Structures are given as C-alpha cells and as structure tokens.
Image 1 (spheres, protein in one colour):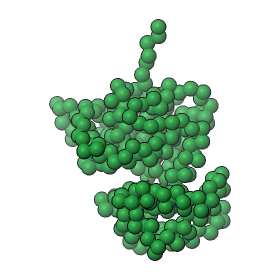
Image 2: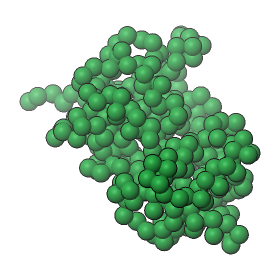
Image 3: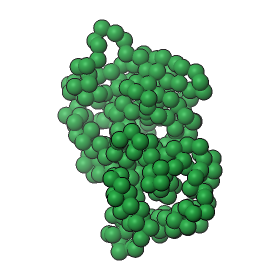
Image 4: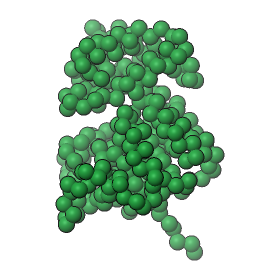
Length: 311
Ligand code: PAF
C-alpha cells in the first residue's frame, strides 16, 4: 500500500484568517508554518513553544504553532496567502525566491483585483483563489476569536491552475474537518457575489460608524439600493448575472442576520488600519471607468470616506 503523503503548508499573513487556518490545519494533523517578517521573528522568544489562542463559543483552545521567517531559505511547496488585499502582492514578492515551479498558491483576500494581479505576476504557478464567509477577528498576535462558521469556495485562477485535473494540496483543504470548504470552477463568480455585498455594506458602515443592522433604517436604504444597482451594472461587464434587486435582497438579508456586527472595514477604521475598500468599491470604480459606466453612488461614497480620511 502506498503511504498517504500529506502536503505541507506555509501560511503568510498572521491575521485572524491566517491564524484560523493554521489552527484548523493543526487540528487536522496537516503540518503548516506561519510565516512572519524577519523583524517580528527575531522578537519571538526562541526557547518557548509559541501557542495560538483561539476562542470559539466562549471556549479557549491553545494550540502549538510553528512559526518561521519570510527570510528563511527552504522552498515553499504550498502557500496560503492570508494578508490584507493591499499587502498581498508585496507579501508574495517577499518570498518569491522560495517558490518553485511546483508551488501551489491559494489567495484568501477580500475584494477583487489583488488576486488577478498576483495570478498575472506568477503565470508559471498554480494560483487558486478563495472566497470565504468565515468570521474571525484578531485580538492580538496569535490570539483570535472565531465569530462564526462560514463557507469557503476555492477555485483555479491562473492558467496553470485551470489546466490541473488534480491538486493534492488543494484537496487536503477541501477535506478539512471543522471547515466548510468546496471547490468551484468559477471562483470569480464567488468573489463577485461577496464583493457585491461588501460594496454596499462596508463603506457605508465605515462612513456612518454604525453596526450592519443600522443600514436597514429607511434613511440609508435609498443609498444602499443605488449602490447595489450600480454594482450589478458594473459587474455585468465581467459576466455577473445578478440584478440590482437581487443584490439588494442579499445585502438586506446579510444586514438582518449580522445586524449586531461591525463590518471588517469599520473595525479597520476603529483600529487605525487601512481598510480594503480600494479593493471593493475602488475595484468597481476602476472597472466602471474602463467601460465608461457611470457609478455616482460609489463615487460619492468613496469621496465622502476620503473626506473623513478613511482609505
Ligand atoms: O466584511 C465584513 O464585515 C463582512 O463580509 C460582512 C458581510 C459585511 C458582514 O459584516
């Protein structure tokens, strides 16, 4: 009998999602190493085993985690990139000498645009993208809270990934117990669906400093509806088939079920971090501009945010 060979993963981006995947891989006995910049790596105490603290449903779990530096030399077989969209390309460039022609890359960024930029920069590699609704937030380095179990879709992005009939490493992610991961041939459609929702919610909650549920108030609904209408119209040039009314229905459903939550963009603002809105509404505006489509609701939203120094 041939022994089962489990793939080894490197995770780049030690935020909430990177830590969540690191914990799930560990629980599934798949080896992985969380990569941090050399400066941070040097600050870690070398004589103690780092522990990842994950709280879920009020229960704290502490799991050993293997941490390495982006500057190490050993090749990276499989890379899960979990940085913010704006840091993604630079992060992958920082380890480019460690990638081989056989490296599989999985991109888990919010919004759109950063994934395509990476697939174009690394055409010789099998680049996959993911779209996730998993909810987790980072309390401090290696301390996360899992807010909700979502679904993750993974699918090929680069030509090389599209040509593969089988990818052992990707299959290891689909089989993870404790995560709901499925494969799709059309990951762009999944990214568009999520972008359409984020484009109506995230910027508006950041601008009005409010919970998701507050956007259901009558005073915000006309703007939300206009954003949804423009999103459907702009994304249609990339094959999106939803109507503005369908997007609005989904957005209002998300606002209802996540009513108490604060969007990731508002959390970024409150924590003085740059948001990912450039990769959400910004992506739509770039696309609109390219195809001469008028998108005044998105334009106004982005300029109102800029007036408040929210980028
Ligand atoms: O970015 C987020 O916070 C979430 O994707 C969503 C759906 C807006 C809910 O808070």
